[in-house]
Image (cartoon, rainbow, N blue to C red; front, side):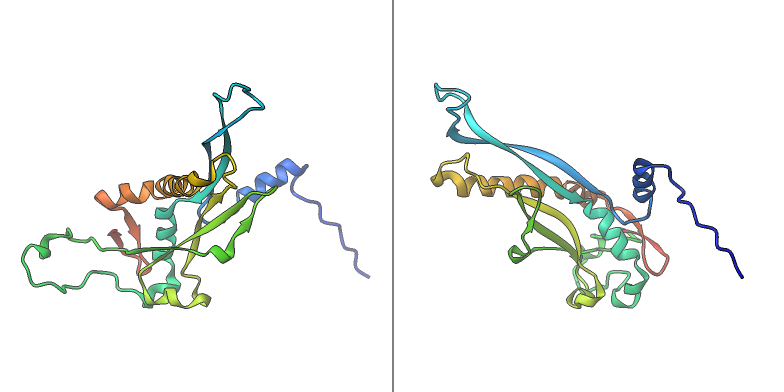
Length: 204
């Protein structure tokens, strides 16, 4: 006859448990930014004079695209699905000096899918944004070569007049994308050193 001892958890409460969960390796971390949207419809409840306009606060959730690219490039599953160095496809002398020695290019492809609209808390909705790099593997869904990098907030825009809502949506979209891609713009100026799947470090 055997006696089994009941295993005790390694945490004393829910807060300590959540800390242990957060410490697990889970890929690129999510970030959140609140964006204040000021409309053009008078807020008569707060200001009967009509001088104060209605507004809303939306949440933009995103992950660092550069770090997501780093994960894709370093994934050993894609080692045979990409070229690790640029090939000479030009004949002009100027083109030969566009990339410094040891550098390569990682073309980024961004996409979104309106049919995958996600519901956040309450009646808030968000539009997912995906990223992949320009390799043939991206076409196979099972390869998981496309990663989720953000959720664009989709408010109701009822703080805007009907004839100005389209412009407000356009501006909010570009404001959110500028936040998500800010690090990509900086990385494109000087490049970022990354470890590729063949264990070589290249300036991307």
